[in-house]
Length: 336
Image (tube, rainbow, N blue to C red; front, side, top):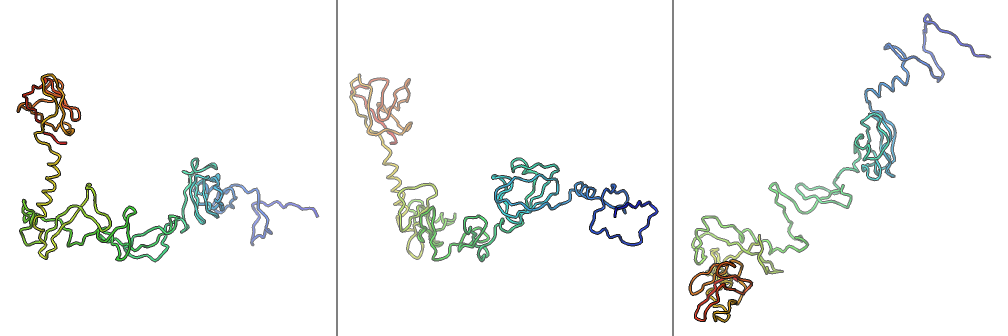
């Protein structure tokens, strides 16, 4: 039987719901009134205008795909972790969300359109988490090589920032084992107070008071003794007596040692070597003086250094501007 069309006028009135038998109502006009039927294109346009979030599907990021073409509010879920936006794109994990933030965004890699997307890491896989039972104030260390899993350590840190090393554990500094003897007890290492320093005799270095006083210098340990002094080195020497006084003569011994060291490098009134005959002008000393630290005396008079003055010096050779006579006395004082 041929189908016929029934023309409806505005006088038609429905007194019950229509069953369209799963068919579409097509060719509707754009709605005007609040009670008008709305077309899909009209609803889609409203969503676009309001930048509403619209779920568009999932993205498998295992092969490092580019971002899809999208408009503001388009939402994609990551189904397989990897890179989004090409090989140099953003690292994403299963469950992460990609949201487009600009209309008419073209497909492209992270360098091209990455700034037009927001990535929300909703998976715990992308966050740093604890991989072992945590201990309050314990120093955290990484567990594994992912950089995402943390575990506790035996070392702890207090409110003042001091790290506590548990008894019986082995610790290293720059790969070298730290020995117990490297760390003096609090009773062995104390900076002197002004009052305590006042009680130390300036000449003998002996503690003349009743308080325990520690002196500070190079610290050695049971494995390796210090062979040279550098900035920051510390040492401790203390009397073994209960009074805590410095041993008699210790400070004097140190001063004597330093004096011997420095004075051994100071040469005083050394006679030059060379022929004094009124012709020869070159003479030598036993060592090469420290530049600018020599004093040349010619018959008791201090000479002036310089090519246009009394003499010049190169290493251990002194050249005079006037040749000394046999009766002249030449003495040199210098640091070597």
